[in-house]
Length: 424
Length: 105
Image (cartoon, rainbow over all chains, first blue to last red; front, side, top):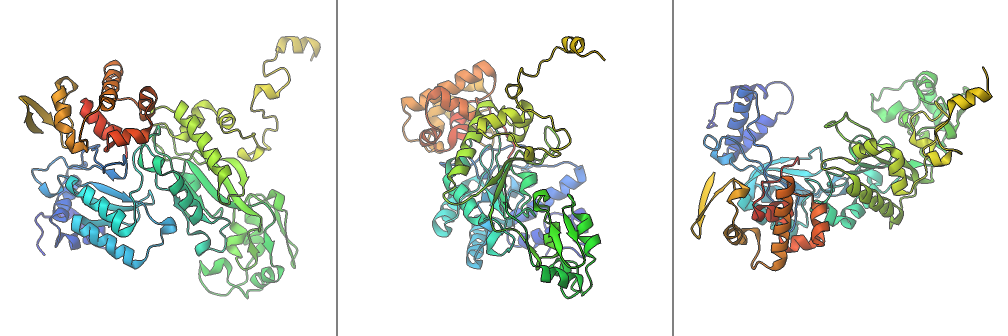
């Protein structure tokens, strides 16, 4: 099909063995003039080496302050069909379980009212619908909610759509019912999700085990990561089967070829805390030193399993680099049972938000506020006692006190008077 | 930029329907735009919010954070959405003639 605009540079992106978004958009362009102009605009951006979307744009549906991101192009004279090209974020089902029927219907609605282009899923976790005009927003919103029972997700300075890994639905390692947790957060905090009130965005992500498949520790202001507080379950027979070459390591992730596992080299020596020992017959683990890196469990899934006394570690403060560099979440609550109705968790969340809303500057993420005012102030606000597990290398300096009140006489010392009493 | 005329006043609007300058704000603007923001009748409560926004803007040169708006007016955020269905940022700021709130999505 001949397109309205020549796109020589975009065409390059169709070459090679990979799937191409250009091909996808071209396929849609046959039916949607919006997609034709989108290609033209993108080609022009490549030519000029600058984006042609204007910054900002504020559109939405009645009752909600988020969920729609306004997009306008700066050359509506050349590309009138993408003069408006708003993005809608649709709250994905927990762990992204859709029925094909729901997906088809969603696509039908979108093709009728928008560009037909989707992004499944955006890095926010939501199902992203790309490109529509202001007059279509309310009809789409009505149909999403009434025909599909789906809702808009979060955008702007609100709680973003919470996201969780596949959890117990498909994964034997999951220590949490991530779907229930995500559903609970979504329903409990509807106001925070739809009506921006925070200094900036706030993300929850829940991973069932420390493999952290949704990268909660790297991206969520509040990361909920499954863990256990008893011992790793060991099936010694299966350990010997891996060593003897009867079982394929890593569940076949690195090839199904049968081979003997060099347990010393591939497991024991790679344990970050060296808490394991193999005597040729039995595997021993000093669980008190385990930092839940998951490596041994990942290599020998038939032999090792997380313990049975399961719960979550709650961490706070991750963010991508904007003001400061990227930051990972820090452990705040080493272990929480995380069982319905999640009261303990809700209490923590509300204390955390109160402190952030009271002290946070405009567009300051929780992690940045903790950095600015100190972990000590944050811990006081959420009423959590300092704990060595909050520190990366707790044994590096054993003389850490969080608060001068914890030290008799405070932190101030008169060095001169001390030297007079203790001559060198 | 679109231009509209209402009751003898002329307004220049951007694509989101915000007026070009706070100085060009007048009560007729509120009257004109209320319907497209989902408001039937303007009440004293609407005006209270509009005036708080304008006072804050005159003093600080920016729109207040939502938390400050709820604190100063004493209205819960949900109630502000009942008054201004399109929200404090899009609806109330637009009607008060404040510049479009910027923000990263």
